[in-house]
Image (tube, rainbow, N blue to C red):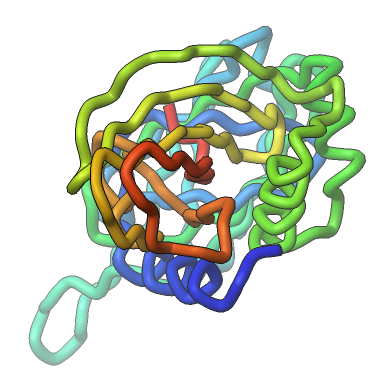
Length: 246
């Protein structure tokens, strides 16, 4: 049920999303794409035990030093032999880390940004179930599945669903209330379900909800209605999908 408007929003958001500097949480036993600094020392924290062996792309200039609970990842810099200018690596690197007995596979996209902190977090039962059910799905398909489940108001027991019923404020000629928070642990997605109630005639579109008040890391938006023009007193649900960055 993700229409072409939502898919276009997903593409635009993916292009326009700024690099996240907050800590990133990673679950084991599936490949996770992260962003790493190619100029500073990145830190990877094993939250639930000891940091074990780390296997990295040494041929790509990855240097790793470990302590009991941390791994510090630095990229080798090269210099132009003629000008002396620093050449920063840009090719993706792969990291395989053993933390608390579980294996974490990370694909690091290199950018010229401040140092990043990645936190390795053990799988809960919910996370393992979600990873298994969505294994092999690209992010776009996972988002489509989550929106389909929201339209039917039917979620697996492995999702963490919290009822909220909180007034958010006004948007155009209408009021917005947060109905639910839904977190899909282990796959990096969460959803907020809003209720929009028109106070007068209003035309509502998905881009209206691409605002920080509705989500910091929005990946997609879908309105539960084929009719975008509402009259006073009419309500509609709005689903906002976020990447679960802490």
